[in-house]
Image (cartoon, rainbow, N blue to C red; front, side, top):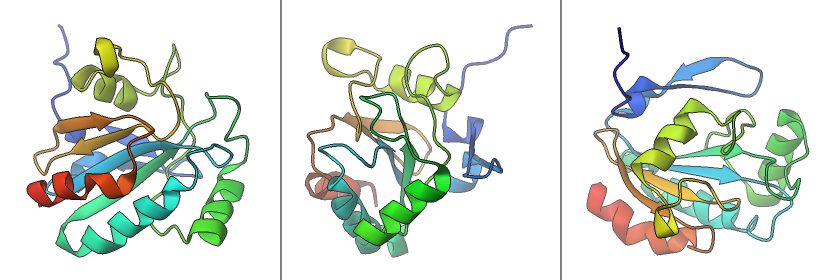
Length: 164
């Protein structure tokens, strides 16, 4: 029997630092911004913009969820504790940071394989090109749009507002 293809975020669970799994079904009804992050990247200052979006819209049903990833230039070499500490101390991050994952290749998380299939990148490529690629998810749990790393978080406000 063939398994059905994932349709929404509700079809996935992700790992928190420490290994506990959480179901993204719990996030249905919220607008989400999913971001692969790194602490030693030229785009790392985007944590400030991500935190500002989270604080601005969280009471209206918006959430940022970060997935640290070490696949691009070894720019996220730390442990979960080191990443969490770095983000809190340097950027005041209070939105959820998940366990470190792979976003490309054979070991890519099922969740990221789905995100990339739902919203291919430039020239219809499925791979993530660099840290701080962003996916906007609607309240129905479906991918609305993909943004490249150079797209600053503050430029997403209108798109977020439209979904809220």
